[in-house]
Length: 361
Image (spheres, rainbow, N blue to C red):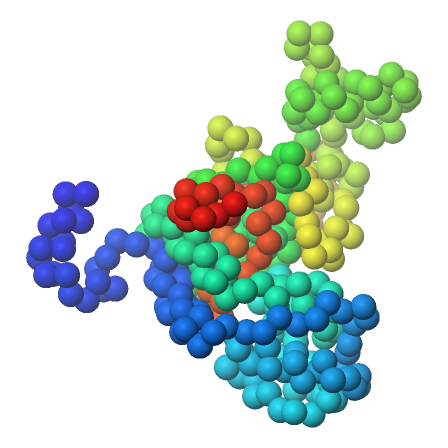
């Protein structure tokens, strides 16, 4: 606080963006807040009728005109006209809108898109303010490489000099098993990992399964390595069926959270991807491994594949630890200066709104 006050005095409160020690997430949302405040001053957008069917390119209906008017509010690239036809330009704008709200880009105006379009502008302003508050909590980023996994967006991005060099879908913890929000440093890659089953899973899931089927451990390539207060200590051996897949990425922390591969690939195609016990599953783990090892020529693509398919673990220590942020932003601005809004999957927005806005429910 003393340093901040000294800076205020020194700079006489001028050119705040050049020196204010606030993460860029805050600054980017602040610029969008002005845009949405201007929309609010104009009265905001009209509510669209609830759809009983979806519309796609080639459709013709009076509601198409209303959709065009609504999209133009938030999309400066789209110019609305009065034609009733769902044409190519509308399909492009619809996909931009679907991306803005974290929906699959299928080109359709459906109930899920209309639900997002019908959120009042005042609620979007509140959502921006909530996430600006979160942006104040983040430290300024240091170094030229940063890994960010944003839970509500279900995406992991690798930034290099503020450019996205790798992006992928992720599966995060269920509402009952929240993925924890914290900052750390990625230090290790483990190829062909064992899965050391957490005691809670062993007690609540593995033991009952063993009682139902005496061959459960063998069928799932698992073994007991000891006992803890009568509960078996279980681990799953390396292999294609391993719950961690063929590689995991460790940033040692007290929450026992890490990134990992998975044999269950189909979940990455769903819009809502909160299915794990808390750790974060990666859609493109091999690509992340290749990127992290890009400056170590001995780790060729062939050697990476070989290490992944061994029947024993191979640990690799990165020459430099990579900063990792596991964040919870339901409103954020991408590198192309487009704003995105995501669902409050864990209900954190609602709790913060109760503190920030006295009228919040």
